[in-house]
Image (tube, rainbow, N blue to C red):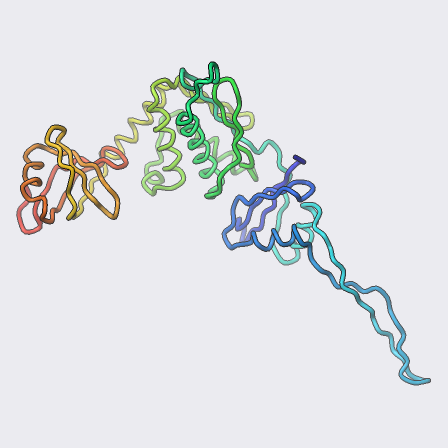
Length: 319
């Protein structure tokens, strides 16, 4: 494929549209589209546009003593054959920018017993976990929901992600995130918003749960950071601390799957299933009144798991 460019449309310095386009304008991929520019851009690339141009002047006689000059125009079809053509056509009406793509990739390399192409032992589920981590890191960096282009690399299982950086800010943002992982730092406020950052951290924690993983290496331009499995466990423990500090109080009418052996039950909250663990006396009280409405309180121990330390009927006292 030809060299590619980023084409950007901004309003008040905020990027509303971003795409990758090849030098011959035949390859085009949207990375961000806040206001549905894509249809207009695709039509320009596929059909071009029409332009009215002056071709000549013609003298029109009214009578022997009077005449005037008439401009003659014709409609001309113009093709869009390059990123420059697209930028030149739109720049009078939009705040456009054309950026030549240079080293706009990052790479994730994993190593371990289940993360090597030797003997073809990389399972689809392992590949999917690394791919998901790469996808969430792309979305965090670009702040978009578009899926990235990923290229598998052989040896220790690695994925290269393309079309990431449009400016120094993007790469700096990604490098700062990786450095925060080195220090086992979690941006708690951002994490609790369940943002792109939250999705990336959870994907990383899920990958760390694979005990065969030895190291993960992130490569961003000239920046390289390698993490050992034991170092990333510290990050996992930080997440646990955050969940343990988050108190939750809610009312539920759908308590089910009561398990006395493990002191657990399931409950529906905001159309989602939560897995709860509790004390034996609370579980017995819930079981005896499982068709009634309960007010439950406790704290998160993971994304979907809560330890219930208080439960009472809505018309009764706290246990």
